[in-house]
Amino acid sequence: MDTAVYRHNGLACADHTIRVPLDHARPDGPEITLFAREVTAAGREGEDLPRLLWLQGGPGHRAERPDAPGAWLREALRDHRVVLMDQRGTGRSTPADRRTLAALPGAAATAAHLAHFRADSIVRDAELLRRHLAADGEQDRPWTVLGQSFGGFCALTYLSLAPEGLEKVMITGGLPSPTAHADDVYRAAYARVADHNERYFDRYPGDQRLTDAVAGHLGSEDVRLPTGERLTVRRFQTLGAAFGAVSSFDSLHYLLETAFVPGARGPELSDTFLRRVEAAVSYAEHPLYAVLHEAIYAQGGRPTAWSAHRIREEFPAFDASRGGPLRFTGEMVYPWHFEEDPALEPLREAAHLLAGRADWPPLYDADRLAANRVPVAAAVYHDDMYVDREHSLRTAAAVRGLRPWITNAHAHDGVRVDPAVYGRLLAMVRGEI
Image (cartoon, rainbow, N blue to C red; front, side, top):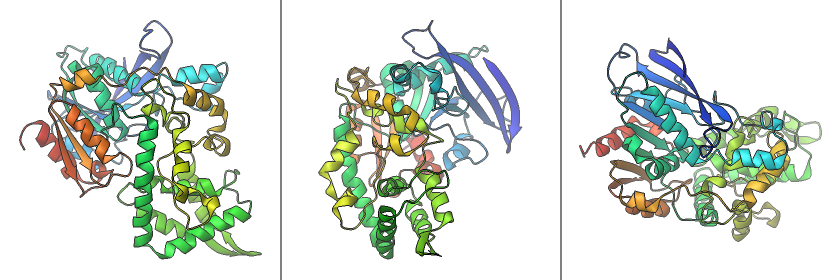
């Protein structure tokens, strides 16, 4: 393990790099790099503080950086060393994107490679990291895990595969169904996204006219983003993916107000608008999110088969070609993304192979979860757009000792915004409330 120690922003940081197997079933096979940053409040480096592992949302997003710590991190540093692990394929871990994956011999090899980037591999990486961090003479003690969104999915997998590595578990907006197929997930998701659209246009009724005008312009004109690719109506619709965050309604509203400027032939979409839209709809910074988004739900011996794309047919309000007021879509990835986004186009064939795969290994162990002895608390956001409340509550009931906290006071990103979310969950797993 390689380690670099330094101070930044009033924090003591230790950067760790280890090698882990690409396929944990073949520990002698190819390896990849795993990066993690251990953060401690400055001046407390020598204290025997317990470790807390942050499992971020995603999939395919790097860990938080200490230059802009979220509300939870400031609270956690009061009594923990916090480990910020770049999940495999992200950040400073060995990257997985169109450039690095081009070295593999074809789509089949790429799909086989990417099949090792789900929650089960992330959890096994975390266990190797935990033991490496304890290799300096410390007792090999379990750590606390805080899982946000997809990180909560990983936490449930952790409880299934390696509960011996866990002292306590806190989950925020991330209790998945251990049994639901992707079709069930997206069928429930479209209904929630439709509800969030109604809330949005109730708050900003004037934005319906503006949204429809943008869609009409995109349908009749060949509009190019600053990167050169065409902005289509269906890609514009994906701006609704951010609706679940606390400030997302306002952000979209203020983006739309920059949409049009006077042009030589009439109204045109402004460079400001197009630049900001490009940043919002591109997967260049997190391609794994798109490639694996449905695979995180794959289980039960059935392929996902582009579930979000198929299930959308059941919700005609999202079909812009049928007329009517435009509705934004949510956290869904479609096969056409791999045609319209240059960051994804080289991964198109591999994505189709992953969508057709049926022999995924299980991510959850129902018997182990039913016999769980690790203290677990989970924030279930009543109006969460990304994770279905009813699925979460059924899962909570299936995990022995899991204490749910159901609240409508926070959006999906509550733990990043309000330190009270972390504080309450910590008190719950400690048995203080």
